[in-house]
Image (cartoon, rainbow, N blue to C red; front, side, top):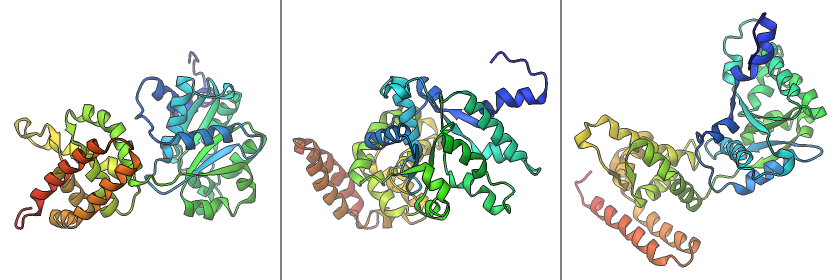
Length: 336
C-alpha cells in the first residue's frame, strides 16, 4: 500500500493484516502451496457452508495431521483457479497467525487491541476476506486461561453473528467439545465439518501426488515401495499423529537425511529400506523391529490396492512384487 505512516494509529490501521496473517490465495497464485489431493468433497462442503445464510462459518474438526489446513489451502487454490461459485470469486483466504498476535503482548489489553485492529481491517474489506484460524480453540479459550482478560471470542462473536466476519476454523474433537459445545453462542455460528483420517489407500494416493514436489525439492527419486512403506510403517509405528501428515513427514525426512552424506554417497533413489530407517529413528525403536512382521501387512495392502484400482492388476502386482523383493532381503537373520 502507498500509505504514509504518520502516527501509530494509521500504521495499525493498514498494517495489521500484513503483520499477523498469511495470504493463502497469494501463495496459491505464486505456486507456493503443495497441491491438495483427495479432499474435493471437504473443500466443496466448506464452500457450501460459507454460502449459507446461517451457521456460515465452517469449523474443520479432526486429529492432528489429517490435513485440516490443507482444506483452507485447497479453497485458496480453487479461488485462484476460478473453480468456485460466483459469490466466492476474487475472495482472499488469509490465515491469521495467532502466534505472532499473542507474541510479546505483555500488557493487559494489548492482544485484544491487535486482534481488534485485524478485525477492523477485515470488516473494511467488505466481505472480500475469508479468515482461516488454525486451532481456533486457542482464540476462543484464550481468555479461559488468563482469567477472562484475554478472551478473544467476545471480540469475534458479534462480527460472526452479523456476518461481517467470515471465518474457517480448525480444531480437534476434544477441543470442540470443550469450547464450542459448551458455548451456545459459538456453536450457533459455526457449522462443523468432519475431516476424517484418510485410509491407507487414500494416503498412498495423496503421497503419490505429492511425490514429484518432494523429489524436486530434495533432488532425488522415491521408489513406489518407499511411498507404500511410508504410509504402512508410519501408520503402524508413529502413534501421536495422523495420516497423511506423518507419512509425508517420513518421506520428507528420508529426503533430507541424504544431505548429511557427502555428495558421492548420496542416493539417487529412496527405497523402502531408507523409509524403515527413518521410521525407526522417529519412533525410537530398533530398525529390526520395524520390518519383522510387515510381510502380512504388505500382502493385505496389495489386495486392497487391487480392489481400489480396477484394471491395473498387473501394475499392482509388479509394484507389490518389487516391494516383496526389497523386503525379502530384509528377512535374513543377522542383517539390520
